[in-house]
Amino acid sequence: MNPDEYIFVYGTLRRDTNSEMHHLLAKYAEFVDEATYRGKLYKIDYYPGAVPSDDLNDAVQGEVYQLHQADVALPLLDQYEECGPEFPEPNEYNRQKQSVLLRDGRTVTAWVYVYNHSPEGLELIMKYIPVHS
Image 1 (tube, rainbow, N blue to C red):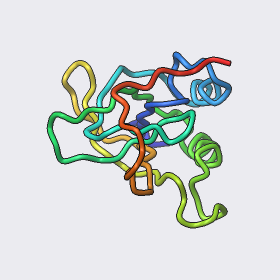
Image 2 (tube, helix red, strand yellow):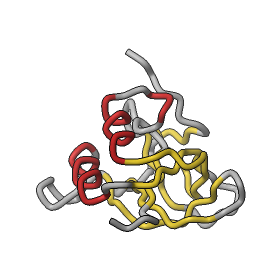
Image 3 (cartoon, rainbow, N blue to C red):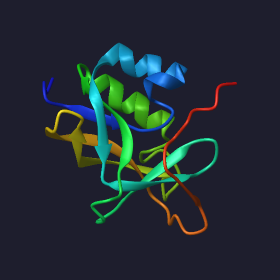
Image 4 (cartoon, helix red, strand yellow):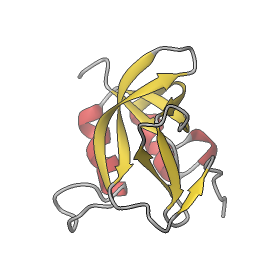
């Protein structure tokens, strides 16, 4: 186990969604802090997708978790995000190591599910607000 293995989540895996997949994440990880990722957030469907940006003013709001069992959690999250070789190419998301800024000012390198298609024609959203059914 890598004690410094982090994941940044910005959509349906956040605490405020109270989703089944958030509960799975919470089983294998510990909440660290709220954070931002330099990117833009787009409405893909009922869920968002983050795209990296070079603009210092672009920030995706999310949460960082420290993974306790990354070898178990990441494959399960990859299945949920349909990210991996068993899914048709190109995958909707790629899991990438990215720099994220914690609320306390520290920067950590964390896994981020980055949207893997052109955002052209998609609605830009400022903040993801989960829809509870």
